[in-house]
Length: 223
Image (cartoon, rainbow, N blue to C red; front, side, top):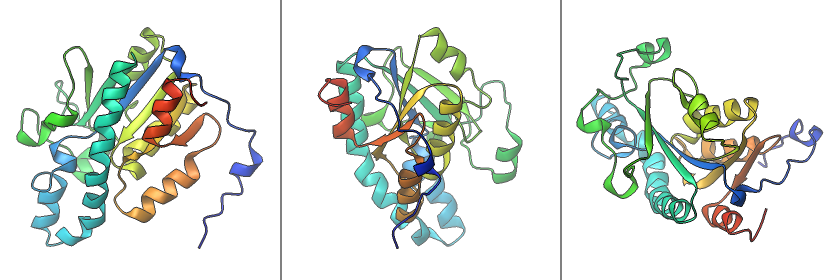
């Protein structure tokens, strides 16, 4: 059944985002061993609960997402866009959100599950925000950091599409940032949830584009 989004049709058209003019940051949300490994984190918890097959669709998407994310990272770095990472990791001050206390879905600090995958890891000088919240803006200094950098546009990639990506996108738009969700550099917990987020998110200050489209935007080949 085709997804209907009637409220989106009531809004004015989403403006063009001149992300090639600088002031653009790629925000990579929660892509580390706890979330994307087939052995640790989510996978470990599913295995302990006897529901490993429930994550099959998620891991299929992760396998497709990672090469796109690597290409996106390389492309943004070459073109001078900023790069910031987040992790679902207990912050240094030990503060845990009430939500995380209930779910328990975060990695211990300095654990294997807190580590990034080498192929999509931060480089020297790229900021990493540790959080136990869903949105990257809650409980962190992300907004202040972005404003200090003069950021106007955010490119969002990561996991899960129907969690950190969606919540961060909506918070960013409410804060006045232009947002581009990079659809094929995200993974949802199911294919259906990924499709739902991408179909429903694109309005106001939020757009949805593929990795190829974003790189073309950075090269001024499209808006």
